[in-house]
Length: 138
Image (tube, rainbow, N blue to C red; front, side):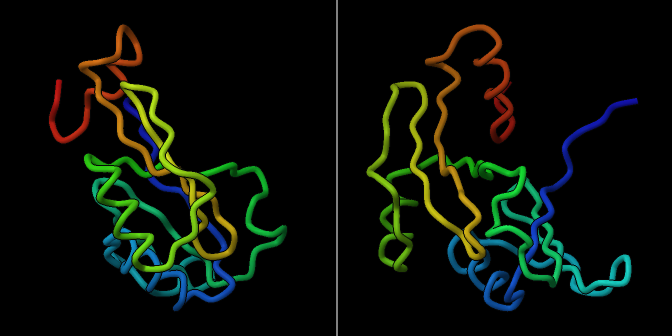
């Protein structure tokens, strides 16, 4: 038996706005939009990952037990430029640590996103192995 993280499920105070944000800003694609467990849910694919949304307002300003959602990219500078042009506010400029760099921004409902780029060739040991699964790298 093998387990894997399948998705992050978030509340959405304005489901239409939230889905549009993920589509426009990060290329999300709706895979399912309907009732699930008695509540409207939207399941989206974002690259090789998944994020699900409940059609319900957040219960505590969007944070709860979730600190942030990590979104990996292969060109962080280009993603930052595009998102800034679309009006996304950032907390800082890109923080660059050589093998890994990141920048934080809010998504709808105050959900914090970490947009990051990692280069497994510049990492060692477990960290190199962990990040080597990007687009078939092994």
